[in-house]
Amino acid sequence: MAGLVLGIEVSDPRGPAKPAQPDRVLRLVAREASGGDGSTGPKGFTLAERGGRAVDSLTVPGPPILLSKGQLAAITVVNTLAEPATIHWHGMELESVFDGVAGWSGIGRRLAPLIAPGDSFTVRMAPPRAGTFIYHSHMDETDQLRRGMYGPLLVLEPGAPFDPERDHVFIAALAADGDSVTQAVNGQVTPLAYPVRSGTRHRLRFINIDPDDTVEISLVAGPALLRWRPLASDGADLPAALAVEGPARIRLSPGETRDVEWSPPDSGSAELVFRWDFIGLPDLTRRVPIPTR
Amino acid sequence: MVANDNRAPAGTVRPGRLDLALEARIARWQPDLDVDTTVTVLAFAEAGGPPSIPGPLVRVRAGTEVRIRLRNTLTDSIRIGPPPPGVRRPGVPNRQFGGPDLVVRGLRAGTVGHDTIRIAAGAEREIRFRATKPGTYLYWGSLSTDTLTLRTGRDGQLSGAIVVDPADGEPDPSERIFVVTVLDLLPDSTGPEPFEDIFEMAINGRSWPHTERFAHAVGDTVRWRWLNGSDTRHPMHLHGFHFKLLARGQGRGDVVLPPDAPLGVTASSSPAGRSGSRGPHLARQLADALPHRRPHHLFPSGRRRRSRTTPTTSRATCLTRWPDWCSASR
Image 1: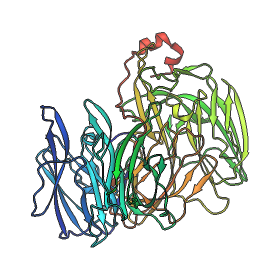
Image 2: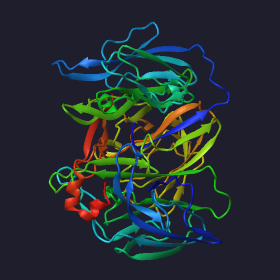
Image 3: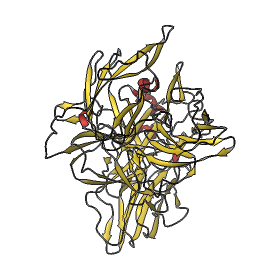
Image 4: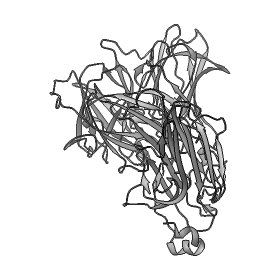
């Protein structure tokens, strides 16, 4: 950390919380893939529930971590990288020692560790609200973020199922482009088509984890700007007065999330347009085709 | 030079009136205390006192008549850049030298439309206005007529806060005010030495880990005002906390947000480059927060982060080429 950072120490006269048995036990493994030709490949995560097996291949972004509001989860972060790692749970209200700022988060001598290669650290959280959050590397972010060490952390209402047919995550982030860096959506510099079912309402969750730049996100059909209904911002539901249908365009600054609701037409195709406007440079645009089926 | 924590208002207060004498001066700044860079910058000072980053806090109740005498102590143009061609982004002018005229904007707390005053080298001007609009305002100076987005040189620390409190009621004594500033001196390999490369971002004149530390208890409510005196956006993120955004500064006054506005994790500041205040007020109910230390940080935005490097020019070279300037420089 450098520059624009303040430290806050919050004391609690009630003392530390008593440990409780977790409702969920997860294992999040930080991995690095081979570049195939001997070059460095993406870094990312695989995820497994207690008793389950993690898939062998990592994805960029990392797999969605699905939690329920109020449910205590224990997530063991296993570092198989050749370098230290630490994970920040962005937007989550949790005990500071688990918050992923190595050597700083925590209290007294109980500080968040830097997870050494081959080591692990178990994080505990009971999310107090349902919403869209982020997990991401908080170590050597310039390299680890652009190589894929981030993913969605989705908290659902108790008992609510996650329906991947109607619940979709789009993450704007940096991506390695040879020796350079560019912008990507869901890890793709040239995003693939993302078909959605017509005749139903969809929840679109947008995340900007680009550490530097604000992105404008629009939903269009040809030249026409479509309409959607904002639902939540930064993991907090909007009040009814703000959750009203409007033009399908938002600006997301680094670290922000937005949830919107959209009902696609019966036929045709829409497009999500992610646009970065850099001062003095041409705009950079990534387009995600959204055909309806 | 002192780091201004914005707790003590400047000037002399008498019933219904504030008198303040401000100066713009050359000063030596150590954003990392004595462990790293010492860099020569321009800073505001209250007459008779040390220069400070950010500039002196102006804080009055609505209805107060404010009289500010502002003196430009520069006597000659100074090197404030350099933004070299080829390194700097296209469209950004090459601004190696600035002054000696001083341009100050935003000093009249949103009471006039085009709030710009120009002060010649060595000259002094007085402005008078009645503070009428409660809110948070940024005042900032420059040695050119550039917008705030282009002011990243040695004049980039000429920023300060103005707070106009409502005429009735007492301000929250625990409220804190923060001003973000940036200094970005790029190496100019095409120009004459010195080839300096200094990049500093600061909150109330200090860069992490030398920024102020805060201690609160579970249940406290903390109210903050943030002003962006830098060249770009700085989304603000609180680790482990949500916060409530109360109002946004718009230069001509604050826009107060509805009480049921959503909680935030990250607050996007107003884009730099617009004159006036850019100060979201923040309050955070910590009732349900867990104890422990948490960092609060702001992402620099709109630029790639760069590491700070040490200057590469010898003091002897600098003194040879610019004796007046370097005698006051690092």
